[in-house]
Amino acid sequence: MLRRTFIALAASAATLAIAGSSALAQDTIKIGASAPKSGPLAGGAAVTHWPNIQLWMKEVNDAGGLKVGDKQMKLELVEYDDKTNGEEAIKNIQRLATVDKVDFLVAPYSTGLNIAAAPAIAKYGYPQIATTAATDGVKDFAGRWPNSFWMLGTSTQLAHGAVEALKKLRDKGDIGNKVAVVNVADAFGLELINAAKPQFAAAGFEIVYETSYPLGTQDLAPVISAAKAASPDAFVAFSYPGDTFALTEQAQVQGLNVGAFYTGVGTAFPAFAGRFKEAANGVMGIGGANVNDEKIKAYFAKAKEVTGSDPDYWASATTYAGLQILGQAIEKAGTLDKAKVVEAIRSNTFDTVIGPIAMSDNINHNVWTVGQWDGGVFKAVAAEGLEVAGDPVKKPAW
Image (cartoon, rainbow, N blue to C red; front, side, top):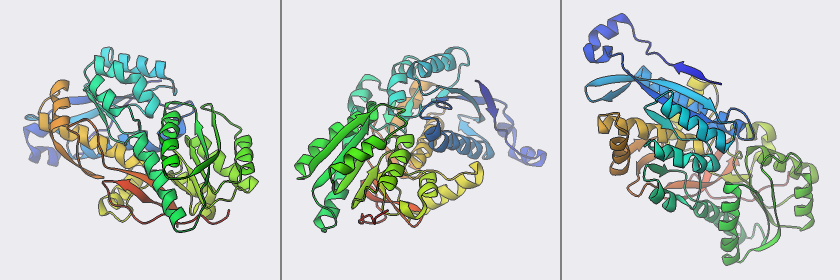
């Protein structure tokens, strides 16, 4: 389903008169977006992806648009549902490029869909600022598709954060060495587990249970049952939102009490704390944010005001930062020429909600890697290149 959204600048006639002829320009920049509105990843995209597009477009258009050379250009959005399907995502990119003829694209949602769509995005020369893809393939991808930029970190970074958090707990005597690990069997889950296992071994942890499950699996009770039977000290799941919630629920139901309980995408969602309430305290997961940072505080407040919903504590801020980079790069390039905007992204430093970002090698290296729920906030307890909001603590029993 196609829906065109044009967020008009709510400027008064008096304001327009004062602004002068440049602000009266009628030209717009067409932004294309393809991401899940249905399928297994629709829930995640509804939290992390689509609200940030809404926020960014409103803020840009309310400010009069982007300054492109001597023009002030507002934004128009053309959006499609990729149905959480790589083939559908590719079709959408082709349609956005050849039928809708959009000027720029918002990168797809998730690791798998970004990788699936990358060749098509490169074919049409668009910059691809991937903000919800975590993969160790970033160096290879940046070489293969020089128009692509990768902001959410690598699988190795994220796995390293999880292992380091568990090491801190073990060194304090809060947990032992036995770990149960599970993963969703798609590109995201497979990369994380493959990155984590050698690091667990190097850190002296013993993996006492390991399994994977297909994307979209509804019944994860057998996974928790088998993990509990292995008597682990810590449970680690590289999971997507639906499985994250299901695994946590089953851990409660079956009484899987461990000193460290870590789940993947979705743990950082506000709905996670809403669903599990006090029991969420101590649960760790991918992401986190420095909740003490004033820019992060302001972003969360503005997102709530504009979209009516709270951002998640991982990729939301990064997604908004990616859109800020796209807008700033267009202005720095002073043109809608896609190649020049790609070069502007590669050669400049950008002021974003998560701090200054430079991607001369097409990669953002500074990321939060692990968060932990504490009194209603998912604060960062592990990171690379960024400040954290505290150290990990032992999880209480459910």
